[in-house]
Length: 176
Image (tube, rainbow, N blue to C red):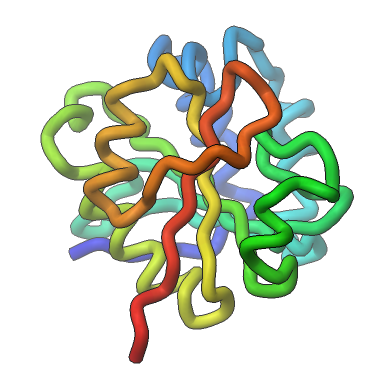
């Protein structure tokens, strides 16, 4: 069973351990290394519920297997591929109905087996779509595995990206 447990301060050492894993270093931290103090500075407010972004440990059968987050899209909190608040994304959708989403699976052995697709669909349904109509995700264009998983989760590629390295993808909440 998949569960989304709100991020807490005692989860940050686990996040620190995960961020050192090669596949996360490549795709999530984009080559950067982080100390536990840096992770606490970046995710501490989220873990205390003091941030508009909401972070969750992904648990499978009560075991932590990854991390997911969503954030309201605002002028000061744009997806990676969106540079300007005048982007066409905001013509196609109202800002208040948009949320950015990010996630990772911590175990590289779980990649390429459909788990990311299953987790993302469950996250959208449980956490994001009850509050927002449109989810935005912004993988690196070279991360074909993630892009395929996102497409299987209901995201579609768009032309909204203003950054050559990023692809902006959207998923719209299904009608009730």
